[in-house]
Image 1 (tube, rainbow, N blue to C red):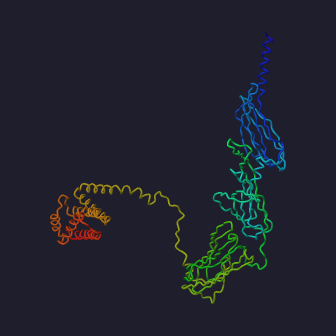
Image 2: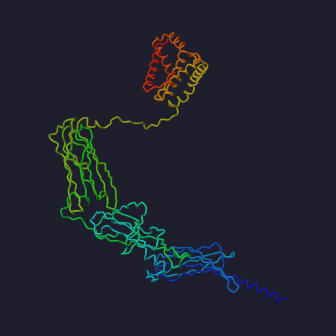
Image 3: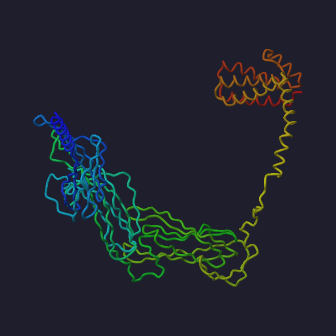
Length: 591
């Protein structure tokens, strides 16, 4: 009996051990040696479903796809088999031996780990000629190209770089991101904004392609010799057709990640010629116009004017200095205010730059502003050109007379000026009334405002009592309130009548109400007492002239009759003017 128990216990232990041993969780790679331009697939397989799967950190790789999950169930000879796989696609970041660390998962309450996997990354390799290999298709059908407008520019001559992504007709791009941007270290650069990516048709190496312009940049080389334009690199998600088809016969697509680069471009920058190079040349390259203009031709002493030195045109406007302005020493000149109005497109900078000088004459007389020269290198003729401004005459009409025999001294804004004989009102244009404030703090406590804020509420009490008494007295005056209200209504309806000129019905209704309320306020009668005889009697008793009384009664009759007879706008205006005039006369004559 004891033997049977021992055998049973042994069988149970063996079955448990076998059950535990049946759990498998392992990592499998597509290859253990690959080129840096290839992709690695790694599968984490298990034969029982689990939870809390944690992949390794994949140091040394970039995850370009995954995780993709696949589950398989099968029955063979009455036995069930299960398989679950997590798949990742990796791109190596560097050459050498790279170790992929352990992945973990929880199965039936136990934690399982995979073994570490070592792979060797070599230099780029030539891929096998597999027509259905997604990576090969992406490589052959996606191209990033940097198109440079000119490879042999002069120093400070504008060139443009356009980065175009070419895509063949049988593939597509669903996403892209920049992973390496050119620095343009030896160039002045500016990116041109692109509003929306427009798909266009073109050719690449003689074949039909679609393309989009991803970036446009304008460059001005700042050094001579061979300069390198660093490459732009992108990580592109490519939709590639496979050899599988759906139930309708359409080819199924798969997504692969592809790193594309425009490649470095080298340009040879030519120096500007030394022959006939002007001594005052400051580096202007392009096609320009130049002028010097004044805001005034004549003024009085101690008044100011503006002299503007301006260059306009196409070229490296932000990369050279304007020539300095020189004036006679009797003219006070101040540091210029620099202004630029420049826009940049693929052809380079366009617009204007200027220096605006403030000049103040000290003495009466005529002062010539010497001619100013500006030189630049013309790219069309490949020669230096000079533009000279016209001589300006500043006529100072009124002011002190310069006692010096002559004033031939010339000064620049930054130069050493000769001594100028000044008049007593040399600072007449400067404000001499200073708004100075004390540095000693003024505290609110015990100040005038402090005592005022305490006493004002006490003073306001008797004023409030007087105001309340007057308000109550006025409220108790019922008759007076009626008169005041009628007076307000008369003014209100008279204004309303004026606004309704041209609208017969509304005009005469408002005019009649205005006249009635005026009578109520003036004669102290109610509406029920209104009659023409009563109105004539009361107005006459108030010493109003008979003609004025008849005019007023006539206006009332017009208000009654006008609603039933045709009336022109002119007649309405006449009635309104009569009403205003008559009311004014009654106010003057009534006693």
